[in-house]
Length: 133
Image (tube, rainbow, N blue to C red):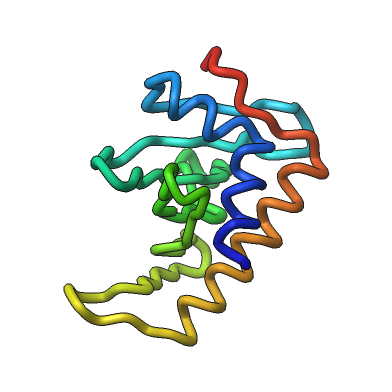
């Protein structure tokens, strides 16, 4: 299932170990021409953790997301799912759960498919969270 695949890829990147070690932020830096991969823990609950995973580039002195995604991780179920997607240029913000009890099923599938591909790219580029950021 896709949600387990996403979890395994986050684990392969070292994100799960960094989160379990108590880190609230980590960064993977592999150098040019690749952008750093950032991870921020946004929320820790008994049954899930929400992180933001992002690449940023600088344009005219401003940091621009390309992309920035929120991901909900269910550690006890070894599952993770995309919640949001945003980028700066062109400005886009999309949310799978726009209100309590509401879900946009087609967007949910689209964002999880994108997240799966993005994680593949990050792994191929050699990104890894080491817990030293």
